[in-house]
Amino acid sequence: MTFEQAMGELETIVRKLETGQGALESSIQDYERGTLLKAHCQKKLMDAKMKVEKIVSTTDGKLSVAPFDAEK
Image (cartoon, rainbow, N blue to C red; front, top):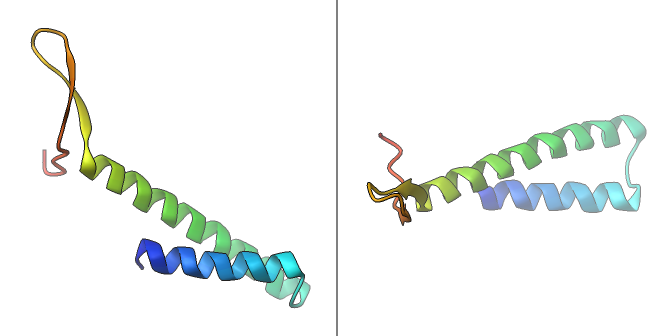
């Protein structure tokens, strides 16, 4: 599931829960699903951040930013 798909579903669940639509059991299931979607989105964001850059220390002690290489 893409980040955008997960966010869309999560937004739908939040709106539904905020309005109090649905039975208690359904709301509990929606809440559980929302929790999973939130964790999924957080992981996707962290993965994207790590792919974009990483901080490296050079031999002279200075810090720089380099592209992230997941295969290292």
